[in-house]
Length: 370
Image (cartoon, rainbow, N blue to C red; front, top):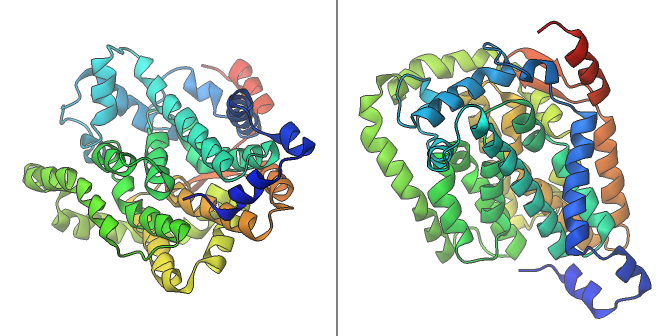
């Protein structure tokens, strides 16, 4: 359901509205410029990406992912990757060999960023508003991590969560539920939060008849439950005896990691929490807190996982625009530019990897030994 802001803007269109309108060409340019700006200020480690470097953040998942693309159902890989079958199957079906499958995560990032731009345009057809929202999203770990670390198909997961939260097509939610769990389990962890965001955006109770659409998650859950007995290292008992106790060593880094993942983008998240309808506020905070905590316990890549709350980021932008329609486009643009100025880093376990701008990474590329 579109916000009242859109209707207001459509009733009165002046010369400035025409100048600032976001045409399809401008929309494509916005996506390209937002990604280019973000990756210029926060550049990937080019010198590490030029050849496989086992043992680094940049290649740990990339090497496993490429092995999966050669044989999607192989079991001689780490348990965390065994169920992430959809991208390898797509790569295999498309005949992608060598390092060519690494293009799929980039396509996912572009698709997610483009969808964010479309969602902002639906709310307000103002180029400042659309560019600001797209750039804000592009400067978070939702984009930086899959662009910096090879083999991570996070873009497709964030696209699925945004489809659950804001998708208008009747097939959007079923498609996301059927496909996204086979890309990464983070989709299931963040699904309740995306669902609550969708209810808040539409002004509906969180528990409604539409909730039955979540049953599209059952095929994945049932398949994994039935076959989990074949993977003793992935059982609940193993989780309770290994992963859960080990998480104590990295959980103290979680607050810093959550900050580094979003930085200035936490302001719309906070605004969303403050303006959510009281009947959804408690369940919203519970969903947000559980999403952050479960991700922090299950995985050491803490700054990466915070991107799972990106639907709340967009919800906060919608709420601010609804309350402040005249100033929202300019202030959102300024917030996005500010996010480029705030230092960012990848936080994994107890390690902080500060992200450098492109000129520094180019110097490293040509002057550091291979």
